Amino acid sequence: MATIRMDVNPKVLEYYIEQSEMDVEFLKEKNNLASIEEWIDGSKQPTLNQLRGLAKKLRVPLGYLVLKEPVDDSPPLLDYRTVDSVDTSKNSRELIDTIRNAQKQQTFVSEYRKKEGHSTLGYVDYFTLDEPTENIVEFCCTLLDVDADWQNQIDDLHPFKFFKEKLNQIGVLVLVNGIVGQNNHQALDIEEFRAFALMDDYAPAIFINTNDTKNGQVFSLLHEFTHLLFGREEIYNVSNILNKEPSLLERKCNEFASEMLVPNELFIDAWHQLEDDKLLEKTEDLARQFKVSMTVVARKAYINHFINEGNYNFVAAYNLDKYKENKIKRKESSGDDYWNNLNHKMDPVVFDTVRKSFYQGDIQFTKALKLLNIKAKAFDYLERN
Image (tube, rainbow, N blue to C red; front, side, top):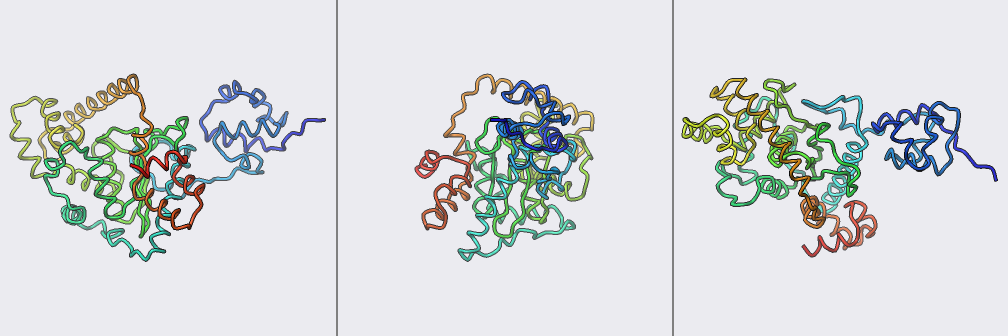
């Protein structure tokens, strides 16, 4: 029997290979892909099994590769990138899939809340950009039930968990992950994005890339929350370069996050109490006191004219080097605990909503698992914990 080959457009293959950022030479070494160059130049067509293998490596649906023209399935959110994002003309499958997964969970929770008779969340799209930052901070301290000296009230609880729980309590979905779903082969690139915000009047959502530093995740979380208050979606990266925020919106979001984490009045007092310390020692001490990064402390000091731009850049570079060094150490000594990671990754609001819907008979168990990106064993574990 003659081998049946698939009629594919070489330009379609080139498009998805380029989008994947995989090298053709790398793909050639994979099973069934040795003839990939011939598929691209049109001198030969792949078999169904070969095309299926290529789709798997490129992480796209098989149907995409047999289209006459490539399809751009990039979510509209990708139009809202800010700060130091990489080339915005190229969007990784990891980012696209992560946005799609987050949107599915958000839509499910939103529809459930509507069906249950919930009201819209009044703080979504509440402020305009001309609102003074101090007014927004005051409003949010009341909304979240957070005091200015919250650092002294959380004991050993990490600030990210503290603010995540506060946001969950007012209806915000806080989705976190460093990979796509449960796929360890699809890591999220911190150079591409650190967080994003998805608008919805019933279920606003924030996604945090956990490949960022712990302190970076807290700042991103509060930065993205401000976007919800302004009613503006975005994909966020961060800049350590002074005065490089591209818009008033980004400046306001950074000002809010900074003031929530390090209230300026408290910072000034703390800074002067350590006046004789050297710069790195001082920023490290204050970073520890306020439970933030040294870069946040240095930026606060610069804004208050306590240090110059050169000193700020010195601290920011030192902090980045320190993070990279610690990241290598963690990687060398890591022994990932799947269950602890699952507890951290799974938003309790999303899980509880899906669980209730399943027990109410509104969705099948297989759909519940697919929405949550977990297996039955993990569902049972989360129910018990």
